[in-house]
Image 1 (spheres, rainbow over the protein chains, first blue to last red):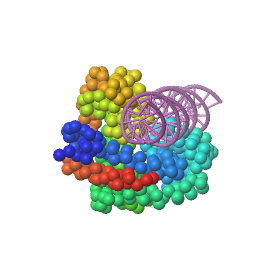
Image 2: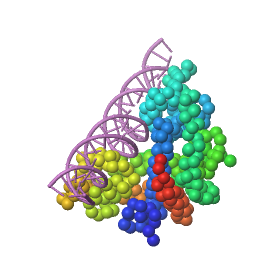
Image 3: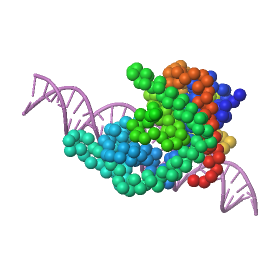
Length: 162
Length: 162
DNA sequence: TGACGATATATTACATGTAATCTAATCGCA
DNA sequence: TGCGATTAGATTACATGTAATATATCGTCA
């Protein structure tokens, strides 16, 4: 039997290991979904990362330090600086230095950003449904469970060096 | 009940839609796994994309045009040129212009590349197992099935403009 | 007070992904 | 034959991700 992924990649032999097949399916599905979301965000002048930052800020409801935002995004700090630079240039965030600890810079979304997010809410939900809505709710729950379980391996690996 | 993802993202409210929760879990799991693989490949002087190109070439067993490689990688062509430039600089691929159709350039892995891939085979399998090995085989198969089913929505959406 | 280590950002260099545009070569068809 | 459309790659511009390093600030301890 040839799998869908095997056909997509024109791979000549079936997968040896179910772990490998699951991993590659994960990567491929994510890539294709990300492309879709990227297109949607670009229509509104945002990238996926920029949207993500703004969603985090809106969800928090109060200014957050760069560090906090970076942690929630699984992004390294160096990338955050440029990301925030561009958001600031678009007047979607404000930076404010903390008076107690002058190393810390608090980031806050502007009114313009909140309006932009509000415009995006429905299209984003619609895209989630378009991409995943053909799975039944039990399937979605199972997919979520399996992905969360998959991530559990990271906790133990993370400790071991190299 | 708070989900693992909700805790990870310090999200204040649970997810409204199971589609959204599954999507975000997909993105997050992929990001973290990709980070792991990226680290492994860097130890061998490769990036994930470079490794992917070489795997495609080895799997095919014969030279492939740039276009073909790009299609199997879900990558846009412009990126391929630079990617191949760097692989060529590392002497991991050779480019050869097709004599029949002089627009086409065939790409072929060098002996050095095949040796590098051979070195990577075991570590890559080991990492797949380390990341996914704690799922049972039925769980892995179900995860694969759900991800493949998820991608089926793309076939129909792809047609509709923007 | 003053040096030292830790922490929060920033800077630089480089690989990658996307979009838009360009060039060269081929194909179709009058 | 010869023009126009198509195709394969390359080029440019820009946003992003990673690594390594620099800078400013803070806390602590002598």
